[in-house]
Image (cartoon, protein in one colour):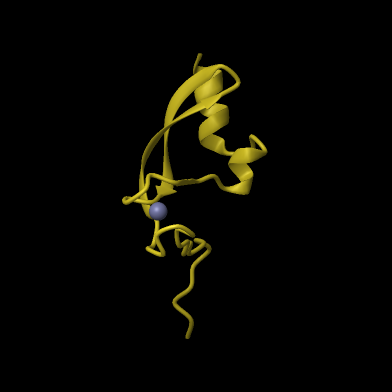
Length: 69
Ligand SMILES: [Zn+2]
């Protein structure tokens, strides 16, 4: 039996520090708006991983934040 659900397991390592990125609140600027989202970032150098969905503006959080304005 697999314990895998539909949730994607993300395992990203900082190329600089070689440590695993951790989920944390990041303030993003997108199309002139600023809003907080939860993203994977390096606790050592502050590098933030931007997922493809977010770069393409397909993230639900982005759409919600923009409609809220
Ligand atoms: Zn780092």
